[in-house]
Amino acid sequence: MKITVLGYYGGYPANGIGTSGYLIQNDDFNLLLDCGSGVLLELEKYINPYDIDAVLLSHYHSDHIADVGVLQHYWQLAPNKPDERVLPIYGHQEDMDNYNKLSWFDVTVGKPYDENQVLSMGGLEISFKKTQHPVVTYAVKIKDVKSNETIVYTGDTKYFGELSEFCAGADLLITDTNFYADKEGTKWHMTSKETGELANNANVKSVLISHLPQYGNLNDLLEETQKECGNNINVKLPSVGLVIDLKDVKSLN
Ligand SMILES: [Zn+2]
Ligand SMILES: [Zn+2]
Image (cartoon, rainbow, N blue to C red; front, side, top):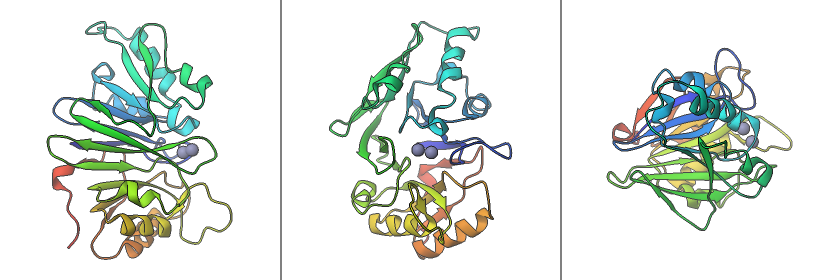
């Protein structure tokens, strides 16, 4: 299984970089995980959007769904559609106004997920854990059945202890690390320090920090996170187009 970073800022795009979007691929399947601002334009550099097999949305904040509408237009309007396939877009049903928008004419169709089921698609098993965020949001665990490799994506969340059980043993943990360690006050995202705590408690092999701030020096955020994670966990900073092949992921020691 491999993952390509399509956008990684929290909240809004800036500096030519979009908000959350990840292309997850194995031999059989192309999954788009979140579809933030700028994601479709980036996706088109790597894959024909008609080759996407499914889209999965962690929640309905704009920085995670901004490009769903234009992806639907692509499937409706772009020439050379290879077949009559309808694109499934998975979302939760705890906000039906947004869920209903996932179905668009006869080109995309909304499909529900919840915490009580494991979805199977294209050799992937996908499970969910509700996070703590101002709107209903789910963390997502994706296991490639053939290789046993696992990615856990926290979605947007504040730090809470139970999340570590869900993330346990992940090969790659993609975290909402929106804040530097010194952030004070109410937080609906994690700091570098909290990402470190989560990664340690969950005993993951590697961490990709994401949902990053547009300010400050991101190398400081990386350093803060690596320091908290200790000497075993390999922490990475994203870049647009970065590809991580899960078979190459190892802990540091
Ligand atoms: Zn967000
Ligand atoms: Zn959010």
